[in-house]
Length: 317
Image (cartoon, rainbow, N blue to C red; front, side):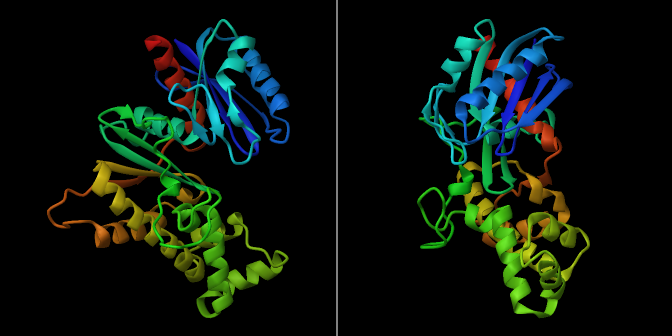
């Protein structure tokens, strides 16, 4: 059965027809109209119509940011889209009545894609962190995607790692999202630039960019092995490694996978993560150590995972 995967992001909606082997047969994308949820729903329906015109499909999976209920139907809350207890599956089913539809968290979809077709395909237990603007998470245990009792499990970005730390958009303080995300990396890079010394290139780049360091500037300097940018990345990696050590104590994954824009730093990111992980791992020396890898599917993970989850859900419904 071919299935359609739709990945709703903050700036774009991506869609694809995906085979059972995770291969993409057709793609589509439009800008996200986050200010108008009804118009965005129209865009999703129109995208499904275009994609199915030339391919026979049996299910549609929609990956959305935010908290999704256990029945994979309702979006409890999405930070950048005005969805609050939104019956998204029901609304789509009313307009696309002949296809089975399921809704899932976007990080869950990406993680499932990596587990099925990417970096995690040879293990049974995997934890994925997506390091982008925020920090997303997906947990696979004994070949099953972990959702929790209410469907909102796996929100690794809101694991609290710093007591009374920086305020987070979720309402808590000290969440890993404030110390291990792309936004956190920019903040840390600014701190290094302010300190002078190895931060001189960051400071120069900031001045040339109107006093602002964005993710691309910091990322380019990391790839150029600038010492100041690498210092900021090591600080970020230390926090992520500490969080992974705590996750290991509970989940005991065989593999940690890192996706998202910051993961393009590759081994430059993985090394400080592994060092901090080993420095904080309970009973080190007696606890088997997982592997740490970069995600393989990159920008396709959301649509591939959403399609595969929809296919599975349709067969078991």
